[in-house]
Length: 112
Length: 113
Image 1 (cartoon, rainbow over the protein chains, first blue to last red):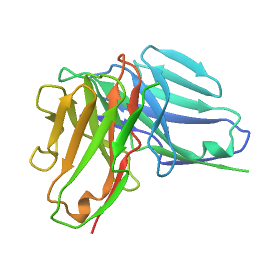
Image 2 (cartoon, rainbow over the protein chains, first blue to last red):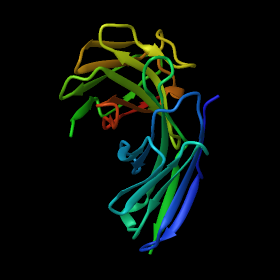
Image 3 (cartoon, rainbow over the protein chains, first blue to last red):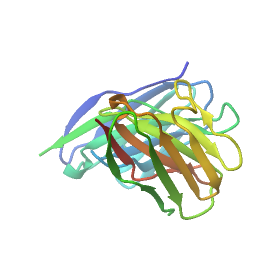
């Protein structure tokens, strides 16, 4: 079956670093996405990993290990505006087309 | 980056009625997707819409309840039929570009009374 797990909630302090983990078990794999979603808004794309290793983009980095079915999103120098839900999604190509399967999301609260 | 819009942005509807949500992309795309996000939850894929063919529905979603149209490469509609309060949700469309990023529309917030 399809299963994507991530912590429900996390808290962190402004200026700190936080790591949000995601583990997945899917029938197919064609990349892993991280999205940020502020309350009442649509998800916005943060990062995409299809090969093992670390992808860095400013304050955000994402890591993937396909053999372990594991990814993490690393947020550095946290700001109050980073308080949001972070969604891990796996692209599954089975069925002849790509579709995204989302985890339940991790609600991050950044406090002063 | 691509622009994707949805109409209406929000609506309040009576049970038993139907609502059609429109999704417009500013360039031609092959695949468009419709998701539902119920309060406090993550996104669930309803169906995938390919231009010129019938939509492909995920388990738990049926065409009679969520008919979809895809008349051309820039536009799609999702209808929520015979609504009940359980259909209160955010409905989002998206598309997949160049096999990498999937872009999401701003969403349609639906409340069924």
